[in-house]
Image 1 (cartoon, helix red, strand yellow):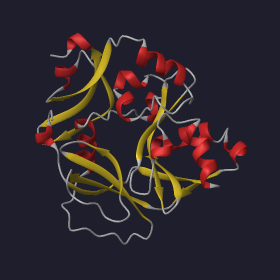
Image 2 (tube, one colour):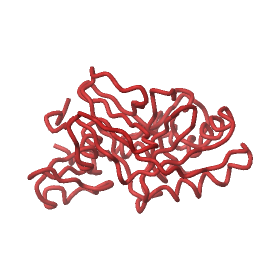
Image 3 (tube, one colour):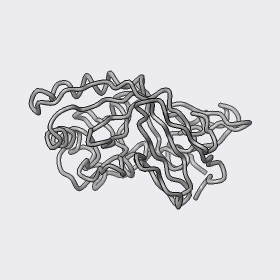
Image 4 (cartoon, one colour):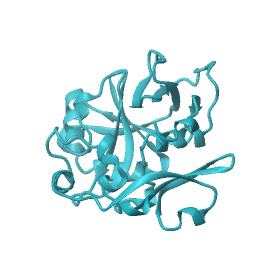
Length: 253
């Protein structure tokens, strides 16, 4: 796996995350999500969460988030800066499904584990590779303690980039389509049927020829990535800077 030597293992409290409870009949929430988000929510279980996105009708990404079912509750785990984008978009459809949104006062714990390491009872696997599994836990009572090594939030974000999960920030809403960022691999289902932006995204999957893509570049200064567009935030660990870089395919050596 490329850049796997930079993966860090341990546990971190994700202070920048908000948790939205989609409150209503379980199947009604499922139907709501299926028609809006890019992933196939029928595949979400109590132990297997899902990275997902919300796009507009033209297939441009509005926000990224993770979907989990925690103790029979549908939860959206999203960056604080993007939660209002999600709420503004989803609120338009809530009355049709008799669902309401409720912000929860909880901690989000992130685990970066070796791929063969067992999870705790209330962990939710989000992303996996041959080297690392990334999972989440909702800590409602602030009682969680762990003997695992502590990670920084930078380490967690770098791990996501290493396994090619390149996410946007709130200010980048509506600028990029999933294929440009590689989100068609982990965050989009092409089997579940219609969702917002699906027609254009599917056309890019089956008929389009990709001219640009996003890759992780590890660098020491901005001059080294000046010919690329940096997606999301860059994160530093010691002397290295980790950036998700969008550019012409031929510009990647």
